[in-house]
Length: 124
Image (cartoon, rainbow, N blue to C red; front, side):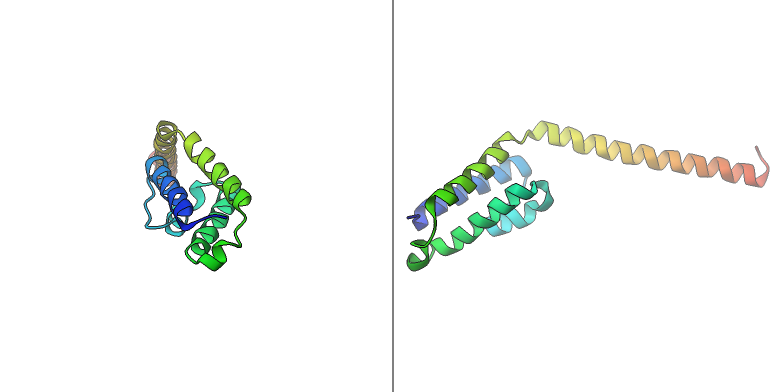
């Protein structure tokens, strides 16, 4: 059986990892996972949904007895392992390269349109 304290500890650990690795804050798991959104793979979001449901049920002693402790532990391990494997430096580098690529693509489009405009006006 999962107690409210066990679930609260798991929730705190995951929210701390999300804040550290994804820069996502939230008052509970539901808000943290919602803010993380598509930064997480589909399988991890699915396990996160299980943990959110378990967190809500753990507050009530009657529904806490219905929780499957092994399934919750597996879901917790999947999410925790994924979050610990996230490389913050690599994410930052990928974000900067993506932004630089978009800027370069826009500059190329503007330059091509400018040359076409010059050709159309008869300057080239």
